[in-house]
Length: 356
Image (cartoon, rainbow, N blue to C red):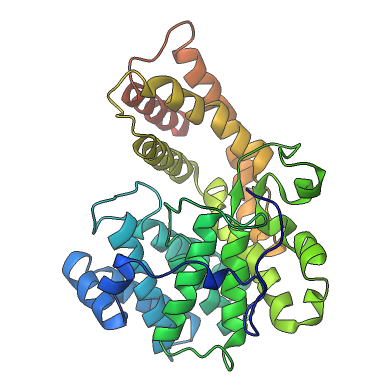
């Protein structure tokens, strides 16, 4: 990612990326919550009541139409742009990924924290993060600083979603700032230290940006900690990052399935068919050494809440990750996999055997 400073923000934002990316055809096709609800009722009628049930739990039955509508609009746009409703399907970054964060992982945080401990607006912000943080997955340009281009574009679109769903950048500034920092913090850098762009970026390199977002803000926005909304956004950004990467702390079969989905998406985006020989070595590397690197080197919990809720299961998963990775490498030792699909099939079988 390029170095340098982010653009100067307006009064309601911190980083200023929301002005850099314009609306696209998907935004115009799904301009508001009514159009989103119509699409979802046609294609996935289960999703509307499920999102509304999450909102009802967070609000103790009172409901919140603005947050529900914004979550549904983000969900529908992701499904149309990169999921099962359009012509660029992604195996991982799609409407089902929204739901695993919004229902299963946020639900575990609420269970672990208690519904009355996590403030309602914080939990609603986490729901919107689940729906909106992956809105854009094919941005061709990055932005100044460590925030990814996909994340910056998702911030811009999220702000427009909030606008159209009845939020106002003055009275509701806390939610805008929180979503900006949460989505920015979800930038995931797979590159190991030392950072290729030098010592200046080392504090925010490797894994989720949320872990080092405060350090970066210290240099770019030295007064950020004096603003209560920004302090809240940075704190929620760390918890949001833990929700996004909590596959490490879910039961091992779910962790294995997430690895398979990511592998399929990675090959699709690289233009390699899983049936081709060219896909074999890439899949083998991703599902063996790649999983070890992600699980043990890159991933760290960024919040106390995330560590408390998901940490014990991550600890329990560690040996299974080592066993399956070693067994997969052993399965193909001395020979090149015939195809990527052969590697995926072997990985899935080894995971099933390990669970027993």
